[in-house]
Image (cartoon, rainbow, N blue to C red; front, side):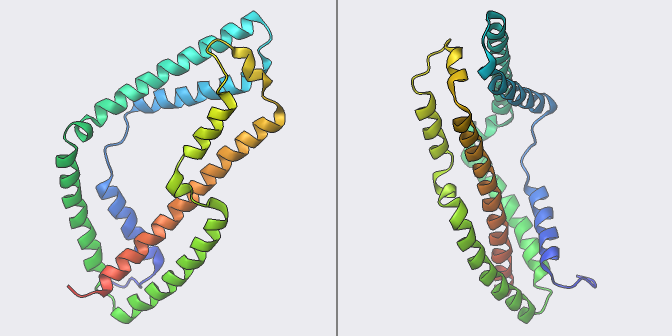
Length: 217
């Protein structure tokens, strides 16, 4: 381990290296561009919808949504092409990835075992205490978002637009400002919740590494 002292920053560096080693194939430039274009066009449609008062504005909104749909289909097509082996031979691919990930994990554990066990145990006890406190504070905000996922958000969107019919673009302009702000607040709360869930997941990785490094073979 050289002259490096045991620290959570050091563990984070090792996990970052582990994540890079096990990372899946990244989306190509065309896939990223199509996805970003779809999101941008959807944002334009959301902003422009309340101002659809004329035929020209309606045609603009229709063209915007059509381009958004085309971009989404292109992005999805590239995604399916990139992940085809995952869908086609998922068990073989998953087992190979697990073997590779396990070897990388064992390398990090072996590096941590170079430190004295009392140091590892103290770091583990402190992390476990902090993680319990973090889980309590996160629960006050996130609730069970990691269990329910996006289902509550989809349910709210369904209730908001269940009576909408394709071609009834004027209905988007009937969403009042308070309802729109609450909807955006809900989206923002979900983003923050998932960020907190990701933070908790990283702490779980710290804890798992320390536990494995302390235990004997």
